[in-house]
Image 1 (cartoon, rainbow, N blue to C red):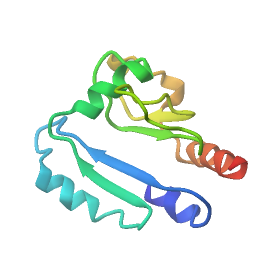
Image 2 (spheres, one colour):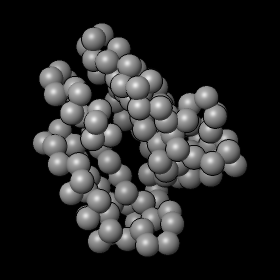
Image 3 (tube, helix red, strand yellow):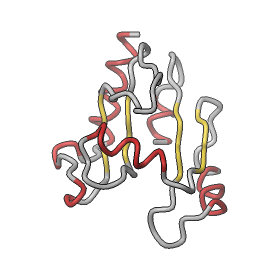
Image 4 (tube, helix red, strand yellow):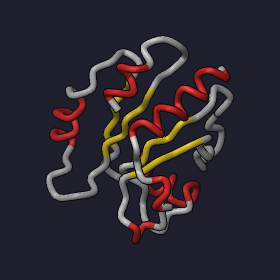
Length: 123
């Protein structure tokens, strides 16, 4: 995502990175270390040790297990007004097939950036 933020320095573009403990070694401390890899005033970093955000997004994205390694794009009109997160305008992932994520949406940096550009151009 650092390349994406470097590419789109202008415009109404911001990000939220939520770290969750999904594999051995995922701790609040390791999340803090990883957060130093993407330092940009438009990006907020958070820790969700309870995985509540992962569980909330799973049904929204049609996943069979908690969401993680997902990259969501929202248009400027999106609002989170309920317990259920809003459905993203576009998303990609780096998940294994057992989670129910479409293989066609596996993260491709250039395709992701094209979608981000489209939503920035519309805003």
